[in-house]
Image (tube, rainbow, N blue to C red):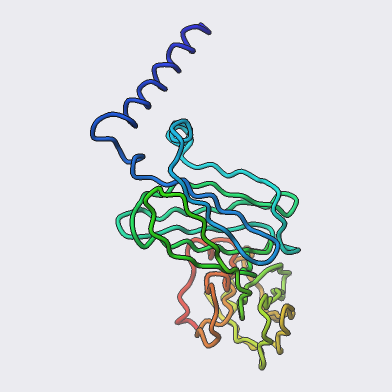
Length: 261
């Protein structure tokens, strides 16, 4: 049985070698191996090269690798979200958790022009703290490129939502370096019996790199169904508006329309 498995594995490797090196090639011939490394001075680097043949075999079997290595990150960063896009390719997305404040990501990207690399360094509540964007043309040639990871100026997100029989409490975070003067407008949609209802409010000023408490009081959310939306009118310029919503119960999958407000 062991010999049979070894024989089958050998056939698979031989088949992959033929597919990669044979006439006409394949998709992997047009692929670059890109190593993304985050450093401790708020920069990232892209190390681009033509994949080794056995790396391609591993890629064929596993598709994407994420490997942690020594590379210090700013305090509090929980993961690095990456989005790689460009003409003629499907977007490559994912998030690599930091292990001991370290991260190194290896991805295989189809060669071509105008490949856009977007990196987000996020807190554990998925607030984006640093963002870096770099465009590159890939052809497998060895190249090293730097990406400046800039602090996000104003990026609000909800977290720590909880409720009791009469109120919903939540925190509005400002992960940027600029205070949100006058606070932020928010909606709280909730269900009472068979009715979808709404409360709105405005938070107090949110300090830079700080947070404020907010709530919707005097309500009774049936089955703990609610949807909280921060800055629904997009009056504050933000990096990622998707961070501005949290929900519970069926409101997560079937949210009521904002028109009820």
